[in-house]
Length: 288
Image (cartoon, rainbow, N blue to C red; front, side, top):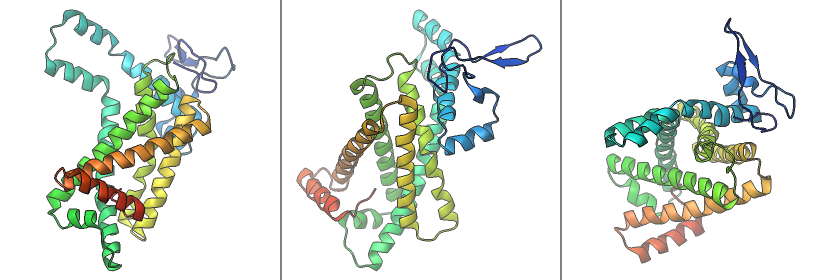
């Protein structure tokens, strides 16, 4: 556990007395309460997350996450020692241990797939009105609704999972962050998931639609800013390093995921897929 103000390590967040009254622990370094959000309402915490308050992010990704995961530490050690746990039992324990992260992943993927389908439908209609040809959009939207849903589901899964693991790897192994942080991988994962909360707002635009394509692009830009700022808050790396990581991995993600999906559409024809990839990147008319 860490102080949300100065990131100094601490043994406890508060002291509980016999009358169930709690007193927040004071940080020995900055002399502020280690984690003031222990006493804050969840509504206040949610608002502070949207406002990118550093204390709110650190409270969730460091302290709350560690407390939740530590509950299953003894169960994991008993299972490893006995070696008798079945695959189903181990999967159930893993799901329970990472229940919060798993639920956030499901929520994020659901929103991402729904928004992807909605925005690409609007983008295709916009291109059709302008009589603009795009082989990829034509190939996808001329197929059945079931095919479109499966396509955008696979696309969203590949896009999020690849980006997520690339950021984890680069921050932890390339920049050597998290060697003194408990559950470092889970901390990065939780940070990315929380920063994706900005993508919930486009749902309101689907209820009250106006210029969907431009609006979605603006929201994507805002979501990217959230990712950059949240990673800086949690890792304490410089803005230049975070921006460099984000831009590099975004380019890699776009190229890799689009190439895989083009191979899917062209039935494994690599030269044709590469030609379409170059064309779509050049014309900036892509299925993103």
